[in-house]
Image (cartoon, protein in one colour):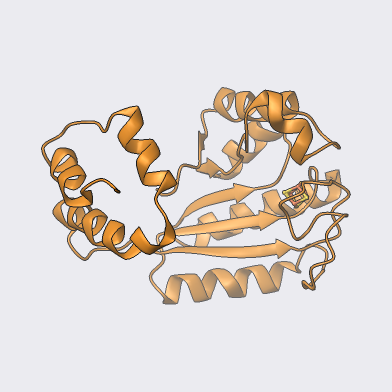
Length: 206
Ligand code: SF4
């Protein structure tokens, strides 16, 4: 018997945290419970945010062609997914996307490139584009660029990047099962470099 989702929503609305068991029950519920879960969750969402939404505009500025083997990713070297593959878009195309994001009243412009980490040439172009976008629009800029070192994150901060999206993906002892071309430690170092530059990491919205 699944839990009473509305009772869990009531707990949350009263400011209580769900227990570990209750949180696991949410994750383990069968698909047939999904609509009931969504209805309960919507009560919490509506209580805090009403019908307000915040728009983030995500641009895939470089797609596919990645030498890494992240098993979950359609852009990896081991994926046979039929996706568009292209190197870094020309600055004019990126700025046209930023203009469209502004027209749509997006608050955040998210700039994503595929790959292990940006080459020097690509990184310079990313910095230049971020500077231009920040000078022309009142966006927050979020970047997802793969593995980064401290020198790179410092330059991103100076160019105006507000947030970097980089995930740990899984537990350290499971990482080898989902990727063999870079390690859990590489991801941790990137997050430390992001933090050292005073940039926040992406947790879903700014
Ligand atoms: S490094 Fe990024 S783009 Fe490349 S396979 Fe992994 S997740 Fe995909």
